[in-house]
Image (cartoon, rainbow, N blue to C red; front, side, top):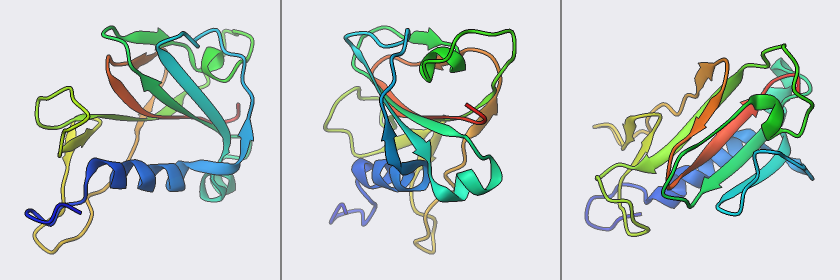
Length: 149
């Protein structure tokens, strides 16, 4: 918690999303999307997600490169490419103060600032429902939920 602004620090939001999206069963993935500057971690999705979409896998990503990467949902979870579009729910976190730095105090989720409202309540932390290629921005991190993976 930032003692001056009373807003949560960026790692708070990261932890909330991890708890909301990642289940307890970690998976070993051999992904064609994995590169030395792109880290991927996969788990069976959290129980709340599994209740609605059994078989969902959540991939946490960290891109430390100065360039963006793109990947298909199948390549993220280590599946063979098919013509079937798996679709995704994406959560992209970037610094919200224009700094690409570990010292940032503000975060944006899918382009929206994460900050408490006037009543001190957390903002909605909804994912973007998408289809097709996943674009992972430079120096960003986040989560991709792949239903029916």
